[in-house]
Length: 115
Image (cartoon, rainbow, N blue to C red):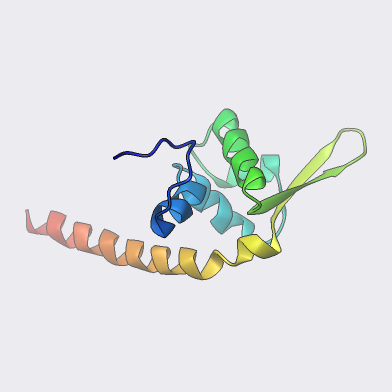
């Protein structure tokens, strides 16, 4: 039976995927692995993402405790995002997913050349 995205599945894989599910979340996390970034820096570093989608994904990742939002009280306001200690526990998982993705992309490319 399908599980609503608002419900937490008892399947560990579904639980993990619910945190990183989203067109841009993996890319956001990958960019933040290099260190804290401002919202505008993130947006510039991810071609094709809209500001609305970036903000939405950032809010969800903050809510899930994967990243944290640091707001500097100054004018103009400066907001930076960084990966939390808990969020860093996802790094090995993301590296494995990235490695699999590279192999998969190469496989697709080889198949396309044969056609």
